[in-house]
Length: 69
Image 1 (cartoon, rainbow, N blue to C red):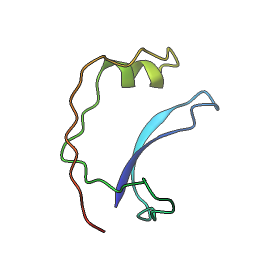
Image 2: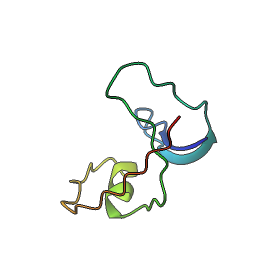
Image 3: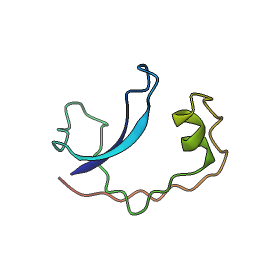
Image 4: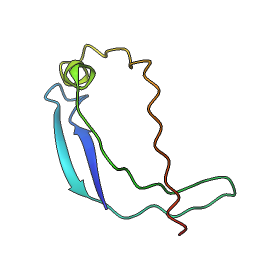
């Protein structure tokens, strides 16, 4: 699977990296592995990279999808 990660935030030179990572295992009842259908980067992400730490939007856009793993 792939993940978007913020790297070197504490070192003062942050950047975003798209990386291949291991698929996490479900370890406890009530946990779920979901498939993300879409993702976007916005002004908050830019503020995080500029170390301004924006406030998350209050939008409610939940698109759950059970992968039955």
